[in-house]
Length: 383
Ligand code: SF4
Image: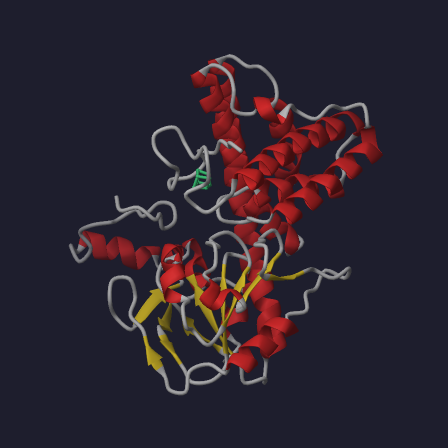
């Protein structure tokens, strides 16, 4: 079976992944994700005609998010989600047609590139928007744009029209980042500079990875007083700086280096791992039984924690696995990707602007000579 995917920097070059993803995504999963994308177009068309619904926009966000790199490798879960989307679509307007998924990546090269830029950007925005939505925060313009974006994605446009659409989308994406920032800071407080140890203490522990602060918070509440320590991994590191998260004493430190090293770093570790968003790599047999996924993440053979009808999650299976594994007998000192036994985080815009006068004075006095802008997250390739 063939596939086509060129959405990330791991992509086989030149020409994308066509047999199996470098990330581990199989051809059947890649094709199902294309089918899901086509189904989301159909749902967006239906919502466009019949009017926006919260449930419909949630499906668009979750479906787009499910197709982000290193999120879901499970044929069963993607198929189940397609069925759910199609059923909801049929309920509101069965006349609106799904896109032909086999045409997704076909057409004149420049136009396909422009169209893909919109789709891949929307997948990323969907992850942000869904995290904010889980905390009860929405921006009406962002929600509405999920419908507009998917409807426009499936139309023919000139290159100039595509560029205009992409510029408009860029503005919406900034609004989405703003609502996520508001969701996180209003729920968990403005981050404060925090030093985070890289040492894993003795005893049972859980490593949490991804970006979902709501999941981390629930896990912290459920481990209060249980003698199970929590460590962040990868992009979960900034959580140590949020006052409402750091108040839990069992949030001890950060485990591991970058996401792409997990297949080496998780081997023989006597702890449980919870994946809340992207960055899962096909787990090695050695530690597969310790992996738990939740929300849009999925990997066949790994336990999945579903959200309950009341919007909460029960992480007791993860906690029990950590207790069963028991953790290390003695403290283990790890080093960061650049060495050292601790890292610092918590320099968000609220913190930096709070000391703007001091920074300006330091620049004027010559104490600060360089600013470095670090964009994006940690790619697997150097450069
Ligand atoms: S997401 Fe996976 S299949 Fe797609 S380009 Fe990246 S490595 Fe290839």
